[in-house]
Image: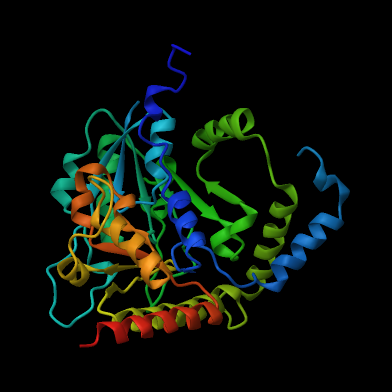
Length: 374
């Protein structure tokens, strides 16, 4: 055909890093520490609720181009979603602190520059997307940081999309705060949650949005005329799981309490394991991801093979999959093109894995450690 079929706003977003690195992992029989899914069963009460929803009530099977600010590093789908909606993404990075000799960095050490953030708000700014706890960094925004963002939203009459899918996974006594509870923010905020992250059932693909009706009515219109599908039985199972959690909320038997403790142990295990080969993990305050600094390897082997213009972290991950049998995701895929060079010495790991996966990881890291010894 001579006419252009694809809309121009979709140009440049057809490349999918997940397809590329998962395919490479499968070809090399590598330990997959890159993708964000638990490789152990979800809680029994959730699967039982799903079974009941499927086999119980049969009626559940019936019908029932402004600027958008993205904070780097951001979950990679935010950029194409913004473009699909006809928006123009504007990027502002979180900045790491100066390196501390011998001391591991925390995700909380990464900060927004208030003046830089303020400069991104213009009369054409329609919305800002925030993600706390943040994927891939694991940062949990403090009240002061959220108040900075909220004040700018109110000053410039900007909407806030708050992605809080990891709200139950925070560590070391950190507290998750929803920006919607701050003064003047409920009426301009849409808060996003996920059953996949809440109950470790990423394949159910059930989520929700909280917000005022004058905003939600537009989402309902899009869903009805674009997505349309509702996974009714899975929604019923999620509802039942929440009802169960409400009975145990804050108590030792709460799944949220147990999950946080268990996943924090997984985090600490991976941090200690990665240190053995010279990576420098950034200790995440939340999520089940961590970023690791690979600057040491960038100095040791700066000229890894790769395509022209390919970021170093992407070339390193491909090398690691093929030569060390370990999978991660390059952090540069979570950044706009202007700032990729500032993030090309970090890679992202997922630590919400079972014991056998950790054993396989440790075996490969121990072998790697031996190869590094003089």
